[in-house]
Amino acid sequence: MAVSATVAVAGAGLAGLSAAWELSRAGATAVVLDAGRRPGGVVVTERPGAKEGFVIEGGPDGFLAAEPDIQELAREAGIGGRLVDQLTSGSSLWTGREMEPLAEGQAAALLGIQIPSDVGAQHAAPLQCGFRSFATGMADLVEALVARVGPAIRPAQGVTGLAPATRGWRLSLTGGSTLEAEAVILALPAWIAARLVTAAGVPAARRLDEVIYYPTTTVSLAYREDQLATPLAGTGFVSAAELAEGAVVRACSYSWLKYPGRAPSGHALLRAFVGPVDGDPAVAAHAELARILGIGGSPLWSRAFSWPRGLPRYQSGHAGHVAAVRERLARLPPLAIAGAGFDGAGVSACVKSGRKAAQQMVDRLGRG
Image 1 (cartoon, helix red, strand yellow):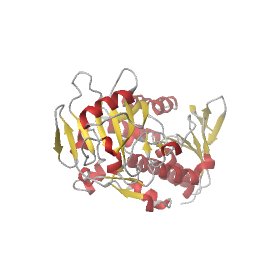
Image 2 (image 1 turned 90 degrees about the horizontal axis):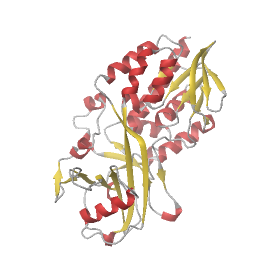
Image 3 (image 1 turned 90 degrees about the vertical axis):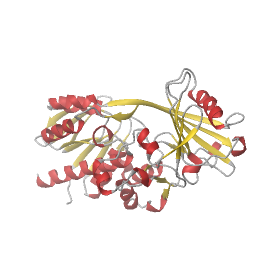
Image 4 (image 1 turned 135 degrees about the vertical axis):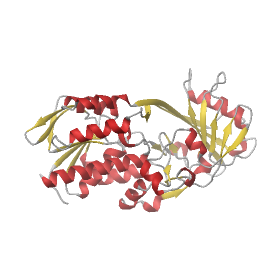
């Protein structure tokens, strides 16, 4: 169904970019508004020349192979050939004294990685299917989407208010400007969307603010392989030693073994998930990993990424709250919510959520 309308998409993370992609396919004019200056949200891939041959992920480094939505979008965007499989399998549990093998998929479960119910129904053992990524990092998909919808993106223009207009909605933007659109998709963190939707006349949206976003810090560290006392195998380990005094590493991925092309030959790339720490998280992560994995010398370089509000976790009754809000939104001019705060924290879930919201807006505009 082709529509001729302006749809404002608030948020340029994967959900927002996926929504804009879907809108452009339907002929709508998408305007992507984002408070930041860089599209992609928590998807951050660095491939700096000074660290030639390394692929550094600041956010998610892959997605569950059982989840189809992100892979379907990649193929539509012309980068299906850049999808890569996990190279190794197997992970370990660090007990504080030794490594113990974990059953396939158990590490993901321990880290709280959950499968949307519809994916679980289609795949008997989705966690055991492993993960996939892109040839030069997760930003491959962001870059492909930006190449298509980039002119529609307005960086440093966040949405500060939302009110009904003659046709659709009037959005108040950072700096005092406004924009009118026939439809709006809020692909924003739950606490921001809750405020905007409540002000638009949906009191039930206050419950969306109950989603808790946990802080996340990742540290990537590069070494020569000869700095490792013994060769490593598998995808990494999860730590059960979080209660030990001074322990900061919650988990560690062997990035250069997990996916192809993450480090040049003869080098190792580790990615540690670090808890609260006084001082430099990279220094703390190296000290602990050196002790656990038998690493000699200092890292060639390190790079830390901190997300004060990182992974969302839902409270009991979350799905019901979201359904109630969406039922109320259906009575208003076209307005939708999408993203990790509502429909699943994984990147594939964000893609699905954004595209579904766009399709709903197109359907409503087509009927109107």
